Length: 204
Image (tube, helix red, strand yellow):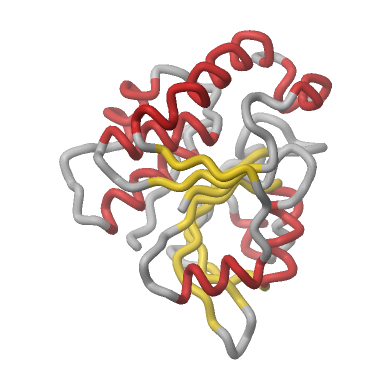
């Protein structure tokens, strides 16, 4: 999976979609064209699922909340756009089955995720709390406030594309990092992706 850097504070999800497209040898798009297709700078996981389906990619969307979670309205990260986002996100959830997005209302454990990734048939895009990804390389992020805020929950998307059984570490691509590839422990990744604010969203 080739590494793609995000260009703005809000487009980490688009960079992750572009990494998946490039891995599947779909070359006729770039960050600019994906941004145009998305038509919002307040990106939710369901936006990314619909974006992948536009390129006829099979998508399973695992989440513990169907629709926009009303409990996030008080989170700094969400509250500015929550009202308009909520309506749009709920519409996209309703349309998802019609366009071939398989929504699964459930959590996935780190162990199950490692098995799925090891099969070699899946690349994952996961929503994580950036502050919980406690790795030294995070200090090198080219955007100090990657997704708009510097404290509390900060939503961020990463690509999960490998797993090492010996070290119990996942291989990820972080669009905010200058490094092409990173290793992160199963425990650390689980904490970051199961943090309040993520709904444990993951695309497979």
